[in-house]
Each structure stands twice: as C-alpha cells, then as structure tokens.
Image (tube, rainbow over all chains, first blue to last red; front, top):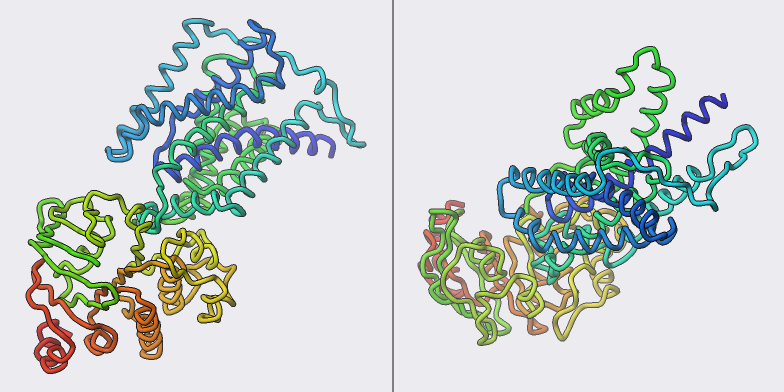
Length: 293
Length: 230
C-alpha cells in the first residue's frame, strides 16, 4: 500500500510538470493558433537560467523562481512581436519550421557555452528533507512542487473563468473575428498571452532544476510527452491540458511500477493512451471541434 | 448615417459585390433583400470590417471608416448580429451579454435585458450554446442593445424562428427604432421586412438592382417572392 502511495505521489509530481507545460501550450494555441514546438526549450532555459544564476552570481532558488519566468516571458513577448506573429497568415508548416528551428538555436546556444553534460542544482535548504504523512513520508521539495503547481493551475483557472480578462481571452480563443466585431482588440492580447505561456514553461524549468538533470536537452525529452498530453486533453482546452497532464503523470508512474516486467511499456504507454483517446474522441477528451470564424 | 460608395468585394478571384452604393439615414430601418449568394451578408461583413478583400468607401456619420479594423468600428457604435447568432460556447449567457464594451449613449442595463427576456435570466449561468435557437437569437439582439450600439447590422435575425419569435424580433427592432437606433437588416421574409423597415434595397448578382419603399414591396410582393425563389 505504501508502495502504491509512493507511486501515485511521484506520478502526480511528474504530472505537475506536464500540466504546467501543457497549460502554457494550450493558452498559446488557443489565442494564436500556433503550436509552440519551442516550449521545451523555454523549460530548459528556465532550469539552465536558475543554474547559471546560482553558479555564477549566487542568486538563490527563490529569486530565480521569479526572475526566470518573468525574464523568459519578456523574451517570449519579444519573439512573438519579432517572428511568431507572422505565422498566423502562413501555412502551418511554417509554424513547425520556425518554432522547431528556435528550439535548435536555443539548445545549441546553451550547448556552445556549457556543453552537454548535466549540471547539479542543489535543493533549497528550506525545502530539503522530507515530510511525514504518517504512513509514508515524501521529499519536502516534491510536496512543494505539487502544491505550487496545483495552486498555480487553480489561479489560472480562476483568472480565466472569473475575471474580465479571462472572459476576453476565452472569447478571443473561441471566435477571434466575432470578438473583434464586439469592440475587442483581440490582437492586443496575443503578445501577453504568448509571454504568459512561455513564463509558465520557464517556471516549470526552475522547479525542475533541483530534481532533474539540468542539461540542454532536458526540454526536448520532456516535450514529446507534453504534446501527447495536449492531444489527449484536447488541443487548446485549458482544463483538458491540466487534467491530462496529471492523468498522464499517474499512468506513467503506475505503468513503471506495475508493468516493470515490460520495460518498454512505461515509455510507450502515453502514446498508447493517446492513440486510444484519438480513436474514441478525435478532438481529445475535452477538445471541441473548431467553430467557424 | 451610413454611406456606402462603389463598394466591391471579392472572395479570392470571385467578385461578390460590384460597385454597390447605398445610404442609410439615422433612425431608419433598411433591409437588404435578394437571392442567396446575391452578396447581402458580404455587404454587412464589409460594413463591420470583417471582409478583407474589398474596394470602395464606407462612411459612418461622414467619417471614412473603410480602413478601420472591426473593433474600432464597434466602438463607434456598430452592433453586429451575425447570421449564426454568434453565441460563445465557452461564455455564460451573462458573459455573452457583457463581453462587448458599452459604446453608445443609451445602452440597456443588464437588468433591463433580463426583464425583457426572462428566458435569458433563467439560463443566465448556462453556456450560451445550450439555449434554443430562438433564445440565442434574442441573446444576439439583446447583446447589441446592451452595448448601446447606434447602428445594428442584423443578418437574417428571423431565419429558422417560429412565427411567435419572428413577431418578438419585430417588436424588438421597432422598439430600438423608437429609441433612435438605426438598423441595416438582411431579410428574406418580405412580410417581416415591410413590417419593420422603412426602405428596401434589392441586391442581385452583387449589385443594387432596385431601391423600394414599403408600398412598392407590398404591391409587387408576388413578383418579388417569385424572383427570390421563396
């Protein structure tokens, strides 16, 4: 039983990363109709930035947790203004080429300076040790990640469903042209929303630094699963991406634990689930067929 | 209030409007009648600023708005009532109503909207797409009245509605007119059109074929119905 709790907990922690990344992809896709293949690179930059800030300037984890998301959000907004916004009128192929190209550029820039080996990042002292939950105890840092990610998802959900900004974003996501006809400058929201999605990826990166190997390819490995998560949840669905993120984290952890006789299963299980979901619901679990403009 | 001059519109290579010129004065209700594909809806989209391929001039209150994006036109007082009713599935009924900013001197309050449409009040927290077709049409009209729009652009507001609801749409448009609201209306239902409108333009193959008043439409109703293929 304690093994099951352990696996479930670890699944939820991995799921928290999937959820944060998928959430950013979902808001970006909703608002821009751009699939950001560079999302994993920004996650990597978040982790790497935290590492560099600590190693070269002594900036602690807590400061990096603010600096990196904000800095990357600004970088994201600059990129959106410079190149990403040109994608909206082009064939989707260019979307892939540009954002994938950005990934390679960002990865190689980091490689040039820091090489490919993984760098260690120490868990902040406040969060070292473990928390005793009676029957089991879990590492404090992972409990923190889970709590923080859940809180963040709830906050984003609250903003989207309970505020005027959220209402405008939902309307612009669902029917951009119609929303313009109701006096709303949809274009004005595009850049901040892109920046926000990138900021979330950066934040996930900082959170990952103390528990995952920090290296230039860490985002590339993760993002493939995140895309499966987004497809399962329904491309552009906010709730779907978060739910599928945690769900896939759990499925993976349970698969690893209880199907350990089949080592390949835990790596492929995500894609088996994705294929199954697509057969059953082509728009994903919480996706909607595209409405006309 | 609205002046359209030599307006042409294209879908790719195909030309759907050819040098259309027409005028709507403040406080008037004017309909566009014509067969399917005559360019009526495209004309409305051009006025709203939602059709990219166009040539010619659109003026509002003497101001050239041809190059103005749709959201700025809405803020000048244009109220958009699209043919599909424009309900948002991800917004509640109340949110659908309050999404547009108020733009005119005489916007309806939310209370007034709900008093006039008790059905919308009952379902105020439901997703707008869960409403019946008739309720969604009322929602679309109520939304632009709440904006306080001065010029309503209505694309077939009676399409698919029961006679009772058609009557209700007519009452609503007449009431808006009494308060000085101007309406440009795409309409196939000639009875309805003569009941609410002052004048009519007949569009054919992207051109204004004729301008008619109510008595002319009534006296030529049979001929017009045959022409429209209804």
